[in-house]
Length: 307
Image 1 (spheres, rainbow, N blue to C red):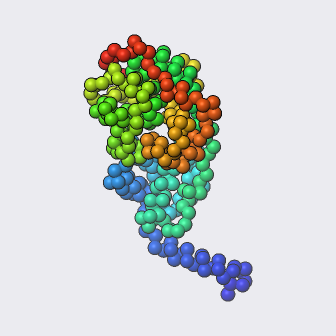
Image 2 (tube, rainbow, N blue to C red):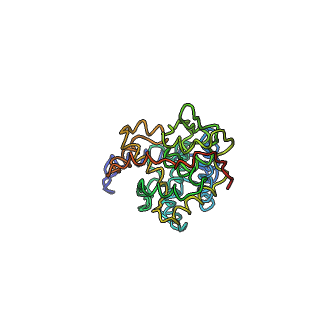
Image 3 (cartoon, rainbow, N blue to C red):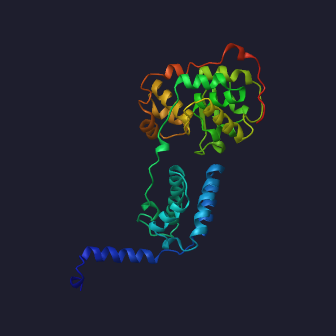
């Protein structure tokens, strides 16, 4: 029966099995699955920022595909991504959100199990802007020396802890433990929704000392970070996204070649740290980086203003 079609027996069996699997699929529109996914992420206790990012990307996707998710193919997803007219990093971020949606749909029985999803077949684009860029101790010293106190506070914390900007904006002074020498990033404020303790380096302790006894949030709004970065660029600092976090990881790993330990400090996987930052400190600048201290005159009490 198969011979006239030139189809081997094993291919006919595979096609039959795939068809039977598809018959068990529950038809569901993309927008309905987005709602289920967001509720599941909220119940899992993931960060509000991550959930809001997913919501923004996926509701836009669902609005363009008001159909059963099983009918959406990789070509249609690619064409939709191309219409967004965004840079490589944003393109890849939106693609990943769609992949997350399709993986969730497969687990819920809305797509065939045991098969690669159509979203996973969509290729990423090359992101040259995503290359690791770090500052030199001289560049950071200039940045700190020229900045006003509130910007200095942000730059020092980002450079000597590696804490993400979004996490720094959620921090409160009560979470900085001067006595025990660590900063607590609570699960609800961490990108990974996992609590971690970040050590206060000896030089950072001197930058923070004038703020002992402060209360409330360290920074009042996102404008503080944005204004600080704009100021750094005006100084001629070669600024790239996350360069202070990248710098911390690079110099910290240079001094302590323990990716597991530093991964716990930064909320990153050891594998990613090892792959991205190993041997980036080609000129052994790490000791200089962690020796940058405030000038003596800064020892007086400073009351940060709100931005």
